[in-house]
Image 1 (cartoon, one colour):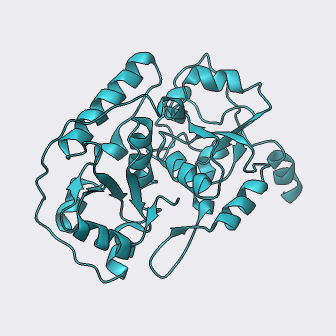
Image 2: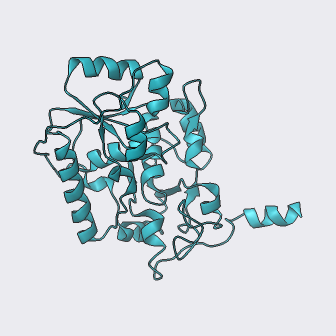
Length: 292
């Protein structure tokens, strides 16, 4: 069953009730105009996680409290949105993924984000909505969705696992360490043996803004790096946002044996004991020389 909602579906669901709409954009953008009744939670995007036991405990506690403060008790369906599917580095999908990790199954994503909502002629509000807090029901059902750096280290020599890097091209080829700046992290490069599908390739332009591609189109993209519905896939990016966008895309296409290294490059690159590949990826150097 798809986790993507159209604006019309969200509008109808809001009328029926039992929906908590969560705007993942920054507070200034939220104040300028948001879906009526939506609550703002930008920490979904900004939070940098580490995969140590202490880091995972902090993440679970922080977002259980944050989602509870927005009124999620287990009975409600949360619907996340961002500006458009490619404007917030996948932050609406990151919100969805965090709920899955916390064991909260009733979650959706507004496909196309606010751009699709406004393109459909839906109204906006500027007044901030006030939530009614609830006790958030944390479970362990989704704990296996987030990988630790030890999980990744063990996977480097496991040919049955596809390590999928979905970062922007300048990060993949080692010219930049992050979207926050070329030298935000101490090392540039990629996980040894990783395959690469830039996260933008999971989407295509439409009149209502970027949207995830169809099932067959996503399967075709994955096939270029040897990933099929039978594959076991570990996804990473810089901090788990773009990876969450790709996680949703793969799930929509039927590739479901997946997990995310949520600490991603922000964590991995800061530990000099962990191996990386630097420079141009295999095969690219020869192409560069041939082009000179």
